[in-house]
Amino acid sequence: MTYNELVKQIKVKKSFLCVGLDSDITKLPKHLIELKRPVFEFNKAIIDATAPYTVAYKPNLAFYESRGIEGWKDLEDTVSYLKKNYPDVFLIADAKRGDIGNTSKMYAEAFFKHLSFDAVTVAPYMGSDSVQPFLEFESKFVILLALTSNKSAAEFQYFSNKENQSLFLEVIQKANEWANEENMMFVVGATKASMLVKVREAAPKNFLLVPGVGAQGGSLQEVAKYGMTADCGLLVNASRSIIFAGSDEQFAISAAAEAKIMQLEMSELLTSKGIFE
Amino acid sequence: MTYNELVKQIKVKKSFLCVGLDSDITKLPKHLIELKRPVFEFNKAIIDATAPYTVAYKPNLAFYESRGIEGWKDLEDTVSYLKKNYPDVFLIADAKRGDIGNTSKMYAEAFFKHLSFDAVTVAPYMGSDSVQPFLEFESKFVILLALTSNKSAAEFQYFSNKENQSLFLEVIQKANEWANEENMMFVVGATKASMLVKVREAAPKNFLLVPGVGAQGGSLQEVAKYGMTADCGLLVNASRSIIFAGSDEQFAISAAAEAKIMQLEMSELLTSKGIFE
Image (cartoon, rainbow over all chains, first blue to last red; front, top):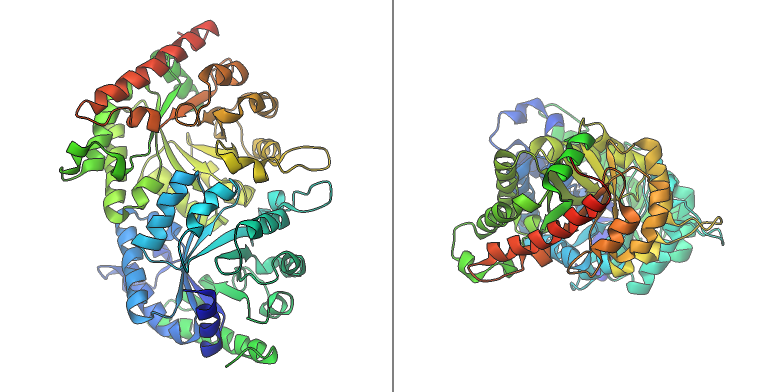
């Protein structure tokens, strides 16, 4: 999917919501566990219920890999289900990969060709040649970790040089030398919304993938205030607060309700910025 | 495997060689391709041929994941084969993971419980709470990326603060506040051997996993000169230079010959340091 196609979807759906498919098998509604493939059935129900409010889905690969071959099958089938039934949604592999060139190339092929994701999250520590192989695919995005939403993010991401430049800003600036908004996004946690001002100075046009709204306590209003561009430029992710909103047989309806609440707030924010068709 | 058990294996085998199972299916000897499971057959032959000279094996997960379910099956069966036939070798999942706490926990379970690896490579960018879940397993190791062997490593790893401290040293110092040599190792590329002096100041006792000898051009003598401790403290990895040493029906013999050459050099280095039983 291209940058323009993503912006169009945001305008059509009046939403910049990304639903994180952190489908932890130990947290599924009890009645699903008896089924043959509980995670895949859960994902299908969550997707069908939330798709009207959602522009992107983000399976977190840890929750699939940790279950070995069964988990990989659930991941592959979830991606196929999305591609077949919701071809206009943006698909993010939350993988946080990053390795030497020949290895990153294998990962890029795994996520972009084998699994046909639109984007993959990448860790910046190893520098440009660990990112480059992902940039060689047309209409695909790298989403580079910049400022993450976890507590210990500050330990290295705020590490600063003589000019008082933090590592996370160095990462953003360097990355925009290798790429641009057509193939590069950044992860910036909602829990650090005030930092979005600095991020936007370094990355005025790139989309930001913003985790941390919901279960982790970030505010959607703050994120939009400091982070929204003329093209929206935001994908706000919520995982647990949506997919585990309910735990009984009505779990999908509960998830849809949570997604809808977020989408309504997003619709207002987009409208007030004049971002609609 | 514990620190002491690893040191013992190094003394018994007179080797600190780690063989990287970067088993790229496109590079296998032609005659294997016709078999039902070429990568698994290749790995078994490489392992049987090199095990006398090797204390550790390191499958690079990218080369398995990129092949989806088939690849995961090859990885699982390779690990099982190693555990069953060579229970004394140290098994490293070269995964370079690192995510928020609940996700890292899933990865830790995937690699340490589901697959029974002894160690996993982890990227430091997200800080201590992305590493902590891996440290909670007895007799298992985190191998944290510090100074990698790729060309662009310098872009962020040499990023320096006011006191002229580089990020990679900050990573090592911080990590040794969360952990010690019993559960923490560091990746330090052989291509930066002179930097090992600084690494050893910050990490006098931790094992270092050293890639970059062989195909990437680093020198074993230099690595030992600057990096060896009284307990050896080194695992030197070679991947392509060993596993793809030959491409005909004798490929395993060629791999064994390359491994043996390295082991002989290692044996001399260990002996000259008085590290033997």
